[in-house]
Image (cartoon, rainbow, N blue to C red; front, side):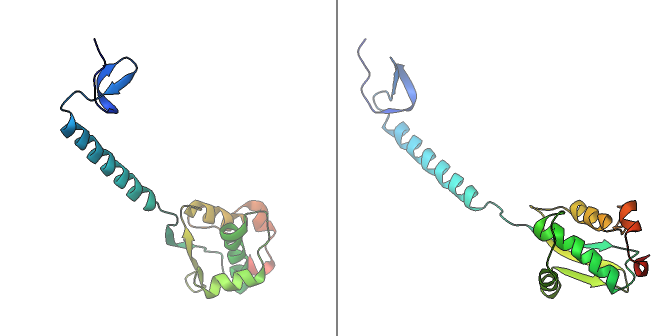
Length: 156
């Protein structure tokens, strides 16, 4: 049996180790090209639509945040989580920038902190644990006992 004539492609009659369209496969070849084109367009569209950032705004209840000294500690803990990590210091300028840009809003009368953050990088629990490690209950996350002992007297 001789080799089938036609163009190599993905699907058709198998002859030896190569795939060929059978004679008269022009419509099939056109359909395959169209399907491949559509697949490439859909793939390119889905890749370009990937989320790179997902900003969310949450309000964290901090019942023990009584004054500005307490608020400073809470904001510093949130700032460390947002910008650098739990083991690094956040500069005072960075905290002021965070407050002035609206990324964190302190409400001492209601004892809440409203935070805008990227949920693809952090979660609400990360922020709550950061506040708890600073010595304050945050929503349903209890404060660390060691951190509570280290709070200044005006925050107790």
